[in-house]
Length: 607
Image (cartoon, rainbow, N blue to C red):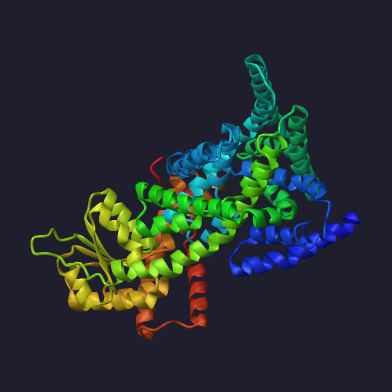
């Protein structure tokens, strides 16, 4: 078949299959794999020359591993070191040990094959996990951070594994004496050191020079040349191309050109990786699946059950609650994209037989297909079922007569309330939090603070929470109308307790002032003033001048706030029109211009 026709058929299959599988929630990777199975010799034999396609698509694997290396910036790894080498390492290693033991003792495979199988199946799918976490806004959740740590650790574990596979192949296919083994290891180390040292001193100057030229296509060509060039160097030294690409990515991970390189390579990687997965799907032997369904489905079920159990246990031991541990286990029981890379490479270097590789390919594909169902089962069935029995029907906490009353009551425990709570906790000041979302604040119990579930605008709940005896009530909810209702109820029923409220804007601040709030914090003010102080320093103001200028502006702004508040009182407590807001802003700019600040007018301490 004509090569151009084959490429056209590949693109057609990708355009049809991938959107369908993404819409169904199975992800793009499984779409590519199934499209390959349909087009391969096992079904319709649309394309017969699978080996040629696999060799060509290997460029996609090389680019994937280069981008993986780009994610391993030393600074990033250092910040997350506890998560990566704690829960992340535990999630991978604890899954790998029993699977390796079963492969070695149960199926009689050699230790090299068992090691590759164990780690390949223990590595979960980055594409699937990150897509689901992003769609549900759970990347910053505790179980999301745990999943991310496990995904990062597999990339760290990948480096020695890629270097070791050729040595395993040499050791398993020939009778090498210790001297030959030592020579092979020494050759590998010399090549790796040469690439690392040479790349460290050469790659950044190359990209710096190309960046000065300003031609985007030249930058893209340079990035591709670096990836393929380093890969070829390692291939000529008898080592995997994939290892070279991975090393090139690591060397550029903390460079200033990382993001630009990523953007340049990403489109090529996506298409060529799709080609690789489709080639893997075409090479899948469905006849083998029909001949030994018990083995394939048995191993698949065993992998899923083992990983779900182990990941749940790792989550609980790592400090996650039951819900977070279930979410982690349901999200990551599948084999990942790197399993195909590792198993293909192991077969190429003679570490793993073709029959074993075919079984493992089928197992990884089936675990990927099963994962959306484990995720939906946990979210749609287990979460509501267990939430009903553990949280929704649980009565509100009550404050006993002998209990220590909280000094601070926080109404609303979103981002703003959490920051206040963290500050109070660090200062060892007890507080209570009220939030309509029980999952939002459930973990606070473990740190000794009292939690109340329900609507903070309810007077009975405020009373139960100890509002009458509090020294301060913080109203930190985001919705302006909701916060007004809470403040109104607090001022009517607990008039002697000072209220500190969060204001979204000046108009909201005025309405809170109408209700007699003692301190009002405009949420955008502090951040914008801090940024302004940094900008002044960029434009030549010294640190003291910039700090004093910001303080002068704060005082001026507070004066303007109270001046316009008098106008607001005349107009009555209502939401202003768009035109009124524009007119007010124009007046503020005119007032700011009249009170302009220059460094010479400031009496800062250094003068």
